[in-house]
Image (cartoon, rainbow, N blue to C red; front, top):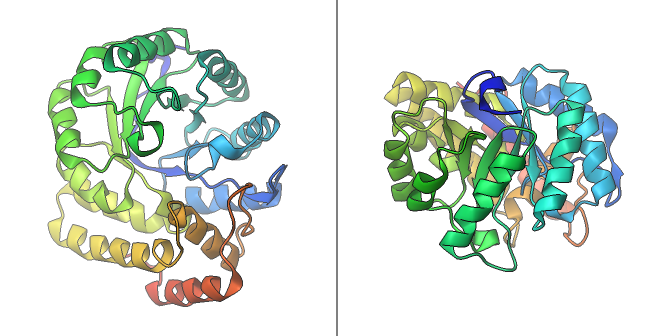
Length: 309
């Protein structure tokens, strides 16, 4: 599937869905269904599975395929489903993308190969091969903290004309680079530029970005959608009010846990307390213990996320 069959540029809030689990090898299908209904009711414009928040690298191939199939079935075409292809092998990424296409996914989100780092010429070559061979439209995923290979504005300028590339998610937090990308792609309205960090979405949209791929939208989709809409419409007073609530959300849910995946751990603990899915992470990650989960639940209750405005 090439760019001309991808209906229109994607924008708004794309939720990087957590992967509801019963254990490391068993999908929590009822939890997945509840989570999908929750985020769609909150107004998200797309669902991204098997990313960092979805613990994609930690899941078996069997579980990845099950999650793709069950998600596409539950969504039923109401919003686009984007699938993370995070393998270091191009052939394995292509195989998973083919499965996703067969099950009804709209696009893939691809990271540069990690562990064996690529120099810029190699990364440009890899992206070109990826784009031309993928059966679905491709969003690049700039996650240099984990991949050790940054997709810089200079690299984006070299690859953006590939016919199957439709956008980029930037989780680097480097807003100078993101603004340079927005300027670079200003005349390419068909190319979407998203940020990952929750606290940067409003700034990104005001600078010309397409929206956010925000983990917090798992729990508070309406809040993030309201923030996006305020930024998109230029309602600066609304942006300030909602941004303050997002920052308080981050402090309440993401910061109490320890470690580099504390946002994911806080989200799963909070989602469990709301009865959406279980507080289970894939091995070897450890879930938050009850005392800290209790603290997160108390802070969550103070935020009144059901009334974002």
